[in-house]
Image (cartoon, rainbow, N blue to C red; front, side):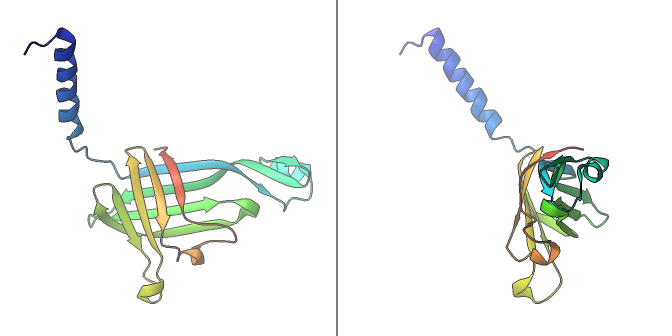
Length: 161
């Protein structure tokens, strides 16, 4: 069987790609990740008060550009992680969670609340979609950490540090 130069190059590229595809890259699971988006507050009496806090006043609504979530993951001395998730949204409602996390697998860490009975504890999984992007997924039992209309769930937070 006779191979053309093009066939040889395609076969070489396929072999090279498949050998790199099987390499297991170690993720850096520590750092600060942010998901930033605008949010508004109706709690400002006028444009001057809104603008003094860095917002833009529009028809009774003070809009801030730096809302969203911050996720911070640090390695602690016992080989586990310290996890902090903080979100700010409409009318300055907040979500704040801090806890210890462990590796669930190569691309996820998990943190479980220790308050209350086992069946109703908040559980948070941080899932890395790349070295610089992650999502936070909860089991739906974390509302005690959040204000009205807020959640600890985050999609596609990007590494900032």
